[in-house]
Image (cartoon, rainbow, N blue to C red):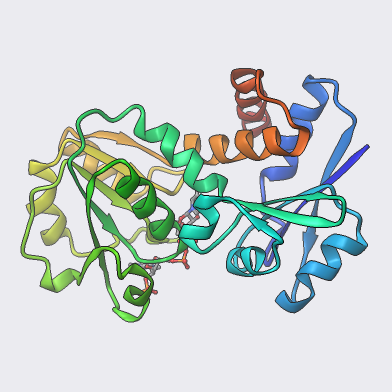
Length: 262
Ligand code: NDP
């Protein structure tokens, strides 16, 4: 029996138990997936080992810590500097970043992207920037404050008010603006300069039509929200937990079905 969990703070809102348990049930596997509210990052490793977890998804604010405690790190997790999926084998922790793998799937739907603008400079922005760079896309990262640019040395960065270039094939909102309020990530004037010249927009937030999403749609951009990225990161984590490779669409469909349940 595999014992799995999502670990974070806060954790009550997490949809992962619902997604993974539905997939476990549909595929008739032997396992259970729960949630664990962790307060102290320094106890992450002990908790995982003491609870005898076979695997875990790690969410805010412990993704960097998850990488730090790992014995083995895949190249995405290593290069991005954070991990959201841990597999425990013979007492050793293996770290992966399936958020990046999820975005890689999204990229398959976007053709001919040469230049991308990322709004936001947090952990998600870093994962997305890395994936885009792997795909030879020129990336510019812009944010409301500059402290986090230290993690983006490999990329062009600037504050919103210093942005002087407005031609991008893809614009991404990787901020939390619009998640719990009705705000845009930057000024409407700035977006109104960029959106008419852009073709695609990606909003990392899912579950609501944010002001950014709606504005991009109103400019006729092909606009996608973060639901598929959420699903794909779950699918890739699930494949790692159960060492399954040939049921990708089925896992995705059962996870999607779980999200639609009341
Ligand atoms: P971080 O806390 O690491 O970064 C947040 C970023 O958003 C920072 O750049 C911050 O700017 C900016 N920001 C926050 N609030 C505002 C605001 N009101 N206006 C403008 N900028 C703002 O968070 P994450 O990178 O982990 O998460 C970002 C978003 O991505 C969240 O909404 C999260 O739900 C979503 N997400 C979606 C996933 C999916 O699968 N679809 C997966 C993971 C995350 P500053 O540096 O100035 O504070």
